[in-house]
Every structure is written in C-alpha cells, then in structure tokens.
Image 1 (cartoon, rainbow, N blue to C red):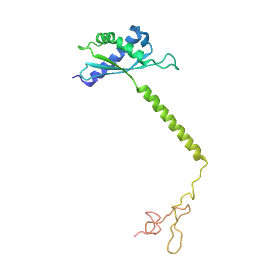
Image 2: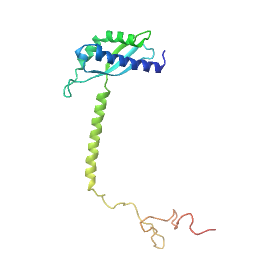
Image 3: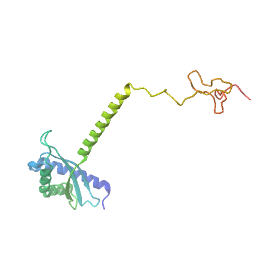
Length: 176
C-alpha cells in the first residue's frame, strides 16, 4: 500500500498526462470540448478515476456527453499507454472516466443563492415602511416604589436593584 501523498501526486500527474494527450495527441473530434478536471488513484495505485467535463460548441449548445464518453472509451488504451510512459510506475493504473458533476452542482447552488437573495430583497422592501404593531415595547413597565415614586431614569431605564432599592453602583456613598 502506497502512502496517500504518493497517490495524490500520481493522480495529479495522471490528470496532466491525460489532459495533454487529449488536447495535443488524440485527434478524435468528439474529444475537442473535453476538459479533465480531476483524477483520483486508489491506495494500491492500481486504479485511477479521471473526472472530466464537456462544453458545448458555443454557449447556447448542449454538450454531447455520450459522444465524449464514447471517444474517451475508445482512446482509453492509448491514454493508459501514455500514462504508463509518463509516470514510470511499475504497474500502470487502469483508467476509468467519470463525468464531473461539480460544475452542475455549483451552478445549482448559485441559482439557489440567487433565489434567496431575491427573497431577502423582497422582504426588505416589504419591511421598509412597516411599523411594529402596538407599542414599541409592550412588555416594559416602569417600576415604582411603595410610596409612588418612579424608579426609572430619565431615558426610561429601571435603575433599581432586584429588591427595589435604588442602587447607583459600587460606590454609592455608604462606606462602612
């Protein structure tokens, strides 16, 4: 069993070799819009999974995933030979190609975030001219002493302690 750092380095090297071979050496027109995004290698270095995305010919065109998968399957032997020559490991890993779903997931997440932003903006617009129902703080009642004096300060804050005595702080002048 190889160490995980070696497996990561080998995966990165495999992704580079496969991407370069698809771009420069393999002349299959089905692979013209294929981009290698990532590669993973098992811990025993015998199997490699290569993740790829496919673009359309222009921004409006849908990508042809089936044709790209068929082209990669046809070129698998040549790509494995290139990987074996480029990595120099004793056993060349078998290659498996998987469509990468990260871009689609990211696009979906962006759409969800945009909907949440729009809902927040709509709520903010509805809240602009709104006033609270009733008094601003219906639960706040001024405390009074038994003799009828109001204990709240000039701004309405209750400055009395828990038992109703007027406490002004740690230095209240009653030094014993």
